[in-house]
Length: 382
Image (tube, rainbow, N blue to C red; front, side, top):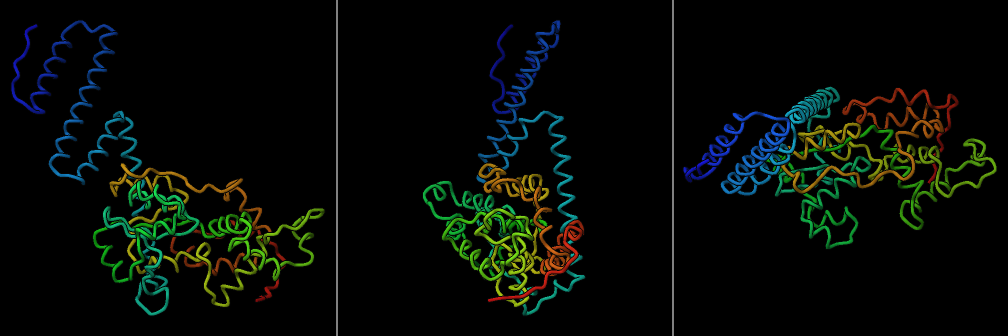
C-alpha cells in the first residue's frame, strides 16, 4: 500500500487519514480477531480526537476551558450506555434541586420569612458563609451536615500548598483564606456565583452533634466541660433506673435526655446556642439569601456530584467523607436515643427546629411515637 501524502495539517487531515485506513480494513474479511482489533482502533481514534479537541480548546480560551476540557476527558472514558445513564442521573438530580428551590420559596412566603425586617430571621446572616472568588462558589457552612468534608474542599480550593503547609483546625485554616463578609458584600458576590448549602433532618443532625461533641468528647475540651456542667445540673438521682444502667457506673457525659432538657432550657431562655445545634434558619437565613443548590444529607452523593460539575471544580475536589461518625451511624441508632425522651420533649424540639422542618420538607412524625407518654417536667437550672 502506498503511503499517503502529508495533505492538510490539523485535526481534519488526521481524521481523514485514520478514516481511510479504517475503511480499507473493513473491506477485508472480518475474522473475530479483526473484530476485536477494529474495536480497539475505534476506541483509540475516539480518544485521539477528543484529546486534540481538548488541546485546541485549552490553547484558545485558557483556564475556564481547561476545566471544561477536564470534564470532557472524564466523559470520554464512559461508554455510550454509561454516558446516557450519567446524563439521565444528572437530569434527575437537577429536577430534584429545582423542586427544592421552588418549595423553599413557597414556604418562605407562607411563613412570612421572605420579607425584610430587623430581627435575625428577616435579614441576611453572612457570618457563616465562605466565598471563593476564584471559582465563584459560595457555601453556608451548616455544622453536622457534611461540614468537615466541605471545609476540607474549600481549603483545597484555596490551594494544595495552603492546605499542606498548616496544621491548623480546618475551620480556622479556612478563615485565613475566606474572611467573613458583610451582608452587603455577600449580596454582591451572589450575583456571579453558585451558592449552596447542605441540610439534614433536624433531629438526626441534633443527635449527630450530641454524639460527636458530648458523648464522644475529648477530656478537658470545651464540650467535655459543657457535658460536665449538664450532668451536674440535670442528672436525676434515679437516672440509672430510667436509662437501664443498673449495675454500671454512670457515664461522665450527659445522657441524651439530660442534654435535651438543658438545650430546651437554653432555647426557651433565648440564649445563644452552640453552632452545632443552632437551627439552619438562624445560621443561613435561607429566606433572605438566594441559594442555587440545596443539597440534602440523604442524597448527598448525587447532589454534590452535580454541584462539583456545575462549578467546574472536579479537577480539584472529589466527593469524599472526611468525618464519619465513630461507631454505628447516627441514622441506625436514632430511635434508641429518642426513646429516652417524652412525647412532650420531642414536640418541644420540633418547635425549636420548626422552620428547618417546614422549609426543607422534613417531618417529625416517625419520631413522636418513640417518646414516652409520661411527661417530664422541665426544670431549668443555671
